[in-house]
Image (cartoon, rainbow, N blue to C red; front, side):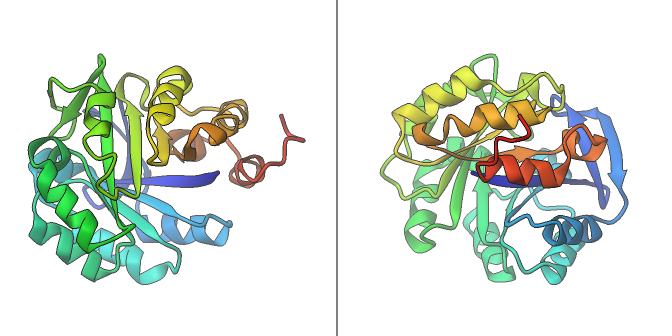
Length: 246
């Protein structure tokens, strides 16, 4: 199972929010590029980057910070937040992003997402961020009428590389991910699922590895790594199948 360490950027800095609320931002690192290099040097094979201001505004704001990450790491970077049209998609893939994450666009224009999947095989992921059972959009400030299952199934045959599933009510809370809904979603899809939100311990990671056979391919971890609740080396070992720590 792949560990995706999270770098959420706001004002050019690495921050974490609580349940996606901008007023709850905690700054963890001044330099996102240096943080990305640290994750790479520690053995991570992928990095998850989100432009929080972009997600709220509808256009990528922290361009310089994202480009600085791309300039310093050699491992793949998946990136989302404010990517709302085909021009945005093309530009970021041309800039070196390995996988573009689309959330709001998946709800507002699924045909465009499907077309991007055809043109960029393996490079488009759909983010399904759920609050109260419904998919949230526009930086989690609005809620659609679609359930996670309904939205995900729209892309079952579109060539989406992965579904990034986040339970917003658990994001940043350190209360553990939504194992039940993650498993249900993974089982109805052939698309690999990446789980996000609430991961707080090595035990959470060990439990998630048991969902690998259901189609959960990876996990995004943010606050728990920055707070030191989860040791990065131990996390990588557990997700690689080493259960000696659990």
